[in-house]
Length: 242
Image 1 (cartoon, rainbow, N blue to C red):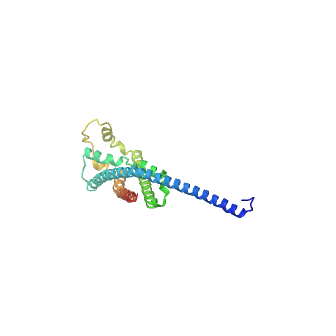
Image 2: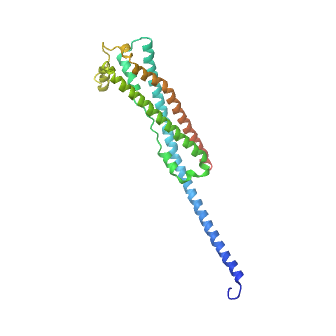
Image 3: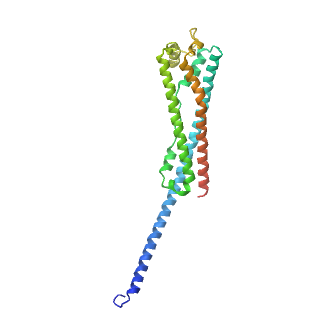
């Protein structure tokens, strides 16, 4: 074409060839991207199932933990009420109700499924926005629970140290030691005086604090449970579109 002076036609032909090549490349890239997105979404469905299993497991753990905390709170309230009304409590009941108050309780989140979803390339897709926001909120509430439990367990531990430092445990060491080593199934002894033991301010504070802050723990546990249900509902809605 050049030798015949048909430069214009040659350029048009060349440009046409280039356009066709570019279009071919774009189509190939588009198909490849679509295929990757499709595979990522299919993988996400599997990850969502893992996430749902974790959320259900967390829900059961929170329910059990909340139920146990309520029982312990009721026990703490029982001891306080008996002391305020100057009613003696036997050694068996005192130990059975006090020990759980001094025990640490922690929510241990199952997040294997969460981490898989967060690591998925499909997680940042626009259609995941509502689910993404709910998962972020779920993690935030979980972190709040963790911070709350650390604070409360630390407060109880500090009160225990203060109580030990002022000599209080000298009056109950026999009772505590018998419980620790299970030397007998009957802890009662004639020297045990519940009303005298309850005169310790730190012990009263521990019991009152547990009874009081249990309302906060219950609210946080319920909030996380409800948020988990919202995540599951959003996932099920998303799966119906696929």
